[in-house]
Every structure is written in C-alpha cells, then in structure tokens.
Amino acid sequence: MGTKAIISGVHDTQVGALPDSTCMSLHAEAALGALADAGLKVSDIDGLLTAYSFASPQLMLGGVLGEYLGLRPKVNASIAMGGMTAGLLVRHAESLVRSGRCRHVLCVTGDNRLTGMGDKVQAALADVGHPQYEQPYGMSVPAAFAMAAQVYFHEGWLNGDHLAAVAVNQRANAALHPQSHMKKPITMDDVRKSKVIASPLRMLDCCLVSDGGAAVVVSAAETGRDRPKRAVELLGIGEGHTHEHIFAAPSLVDFGCKESAADALAQAGLKHQDVDCAHIYDCFTSTLLITLESMGFYGRGQAGPAALAGEFAIGGRFPVNTNGGLLSYGSSGAAGGMFHVVEAVRQLRGECGPRQVKDAEVALAHTLGGIFSGHCSIIMGRA
Amino acid sequence: MAEVQAKPMPVPDSISRPYWEGANQGEFRFQRCRTCGKAQFYSRYACVHCQSTELQWQVAEGLGRVASFSVIHRAPIAAFMADTPYVLALVDLDEGFRFMCNVLNCDPATVKVGMRVRVCYETRPGSEQKVPQVEPATS
Image (spheres, rainbow over the protein chains, first blue to last red):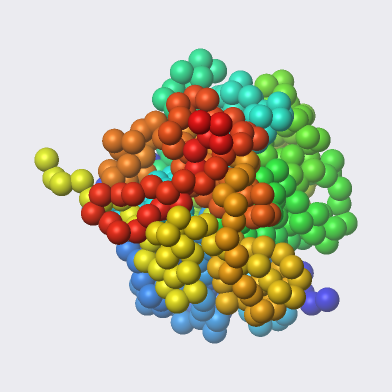
C-alpha cells in the first residue's frame, strides 16, 4: 500500500465547433488550465499521460505534447483504448503516484473532431469494425451499440420513452453548463420523432461530435494541503474487458462494467447506494441505461423507468451526467470520457453552481471503449 | 457526381483463407478444437476457449437464429447508402458460435430476435469473393 492519490486539478475547454482550435492548442489549453487549477507549474509535472487524436494522428502524442508545452517528464506514455482511455489515464496516473514513481501526473485529452477532420472523416468511418468480419456488412457504430439495445427492447426492459427521457434530462443539464455544446431544450417528442439512425436508436439518442479538450492532474495525497482547491481522493478504480468486436461479446446483456464497477466499489469499501452522483460514458442513450443495469445500480428493466421517473435529474434520487454528457455537453474523442471525470471532481468540490448535487461526497466516473468492449470505473470522494 | 466506392471486401489472410474459400464453394467453414471440442468464430491460431492449437475445419449446416439486429437507416459510408434500410444482424449458428451478417431477401420490418435463418451467399459486382449472409429459413 503506497501513497494515496488525489485529483488536484481539472480543466475542460469550451466545446462545440471551434474552427480556430488545433488538436495541440486544445491539449495545451486543457493542460495549462488543469495546472493552474492545481496551483502547479509545468516544471512540477513528472509524469505525462496522453491519449490519441483522429484529426492529427501522431506516432508519439506524448512526445509531441511534451515538446509543445516545454515539459520534460520522467514518465511519458500515450494510451489508445478508444472511449475508455480517459479513465485509463487516471488509473495509470494513480498507479504511478501510489508507487512513488511520480508526484504529479498530468493526464491530457483533446481533439478537434468536429472542424479539424477534413477529408479524414470518411476514412475514419470506413475503418470502424473488423475488416473481414464486420466492414463487409456495412456496420455502423450506432448499429453495433443497437445490438444490445435491441435485446433490451425485445425483453421488454427498455423502450423508446426510456431512451428519450435520458436525452431530455441531459439536454436540460447541459443548459446549466456555461461551456456545453448543445443547450437548445428538447422534448420527449423531439427525440421520439427524430430520424432513425440504426433501430432502435434515433438521431437524438446519439452523442455529439465536438471540438474540445480536458485534462486532470493526479497528485500524491500529501501534496494536497498545498493546493488551492479541495482535494478529491481516488478511492477505487476497476477495469473490465470482455471482447473487442460486438459479435464476439460473451453477452449482449452484461458487459465488463459489471466487473469494473464491482472492483472499484470494493477497493473503496463502498456500496452502490453510497454513490451520490454518476458520470457515465453515454455515447448513446441506451448505453447509459444498459451500463447502469449491468453495473448493478438498477435491477433488470429498472433503469429505463427510473429515467422516465426523473431519478437521474440533478435534484433526483440518483443524479447522472450532470454536465449533459456526451449526448449534450460534448464528445471530443478521448476527451469525452475526461469531461465526465472533470465533472465528477467539480461535483465533489461543490463547484457546480446550478448543477450542484447537494452534499455530493462520493462520485463515479465511468468510461467505455469499443462496443461495450472495455470499461474503467473510478470511484472518488472528498478527501 | 463522384463514383461511389465499392463495398469493403475481406482480404483473406493465411488463417482466414479456408473460411473465405469455403464461402466461394458454398460452404460455411469454422474451426472446432480437437482438445476441448468447442467451436469458434472467427478462425484463429489457437482455440479461444482453451488455447490449444489443435484446430480442425468443419462445415456448418448453415441454420441458425437471429441473436440481435438493427435496421440501418443511415449508412456509415457511401457504398451502403443505396441499400438503406438494411438489416445488420448477429446470428447464432446451431453449431455454437455467433457471426455478423446482413439479413437478405426479406422486408427489414419482419426481422425479429429469435427468428430462424439460413446461410446464403451474396455475390457482389466486381468481386470474385462471395459473402456469407443469411435469409429467413422459411422463405
């Protein structure tokens, strides 16, 4: 048992269409913002962890960012595990701090996915899925995620109203966040009448594509008293990995989030009901509901009715995705998951203003990569 | 208007070649492990269940059930736009493994979870490679 790890600084940039941004400017803005939030200088950082970029792919993104910022870390790595990467950066930063290898690890994500892709969009879309066993069939990402949703619909565990309630709630939350990508209110009918993309998923069940960046600093707990902001402790982190391609998933009902959440809670010595707010990877409305059930926060067929009953609202029984999530706050590649981490920290610090969950002491941030393929659950609490 | 690119086609490798050559001969081939007796899709160097490398090729009957599906209204790339709405499915063959395909030769609105299907082979313009697909078993 080594040093405890805290999150000492967070920052997320404006999200949306940012045509003047570049992948590196978003990384730099997020990184410098998180350092300022933590009261640290570039020279204090001894570990740098980064993800990947679609708009400006790099062989060594960590090397590029280190050079760009004038950083000379002792540890430098880039991790590419799709949407779960943000969680993994925090998980590995925590390990580096706990082992004593590093004191302050900077984790940075960002991409100008909306305005910076140019003609790379088609190539990126064509690249989705297994080249021999999926791409010849015209699989889209929504259709791959719809495979699990369809089973939930078939069993009567989910329906279109359940999904719509998630989209409406998160749009309302995003309207309370000054930086969010989509603030225009939507109604249940707007979701139900939006175009079918891949049944049973409609346009407003799908997350956004945004430019944006986010960063966090993970520090040794004993440095926390010198930091300007209230420290947030990393209490438990779990992973779960079951497959890569949806046809190879061992189940279409339960996924690796079951193990990742159980492991994170066990490490924290907490139970599901101890979690005051959850910030869960929501590439689709159905993804959120299925993940909540698979993680055990709701019984089978109960997450959808809970959404309809308003339980996920900021004042509800179990506030979820208070910043609006990938559905309405923004989704910028690996930064999508990091936005959830940043919001969880802000909730525990009590910085969320109109979005603040009353007396939030324990938060869950959960990221997902692939098609329910890999999961990372992070339980954090007020230090 | 720019020419629409052809649909992506598999490029068989040394491990998958028997599968794709089988499709061209109207056979749905799969690997079964001599050590543990279980089937696997797709073909690999070793058994996914017990990691034995004692694998043998067998031919499936070609009958199965739709485990799940989605009717795609928005194609991921231009090559599939003319097909919308089309059905993407996960099919469990009776031999005990799952694969992805399209459900052909039926109204997409009639596809259901649990529906019985049989393997068929699609010929695509400009390619010698036949593509394993399914159609309703009753048609």
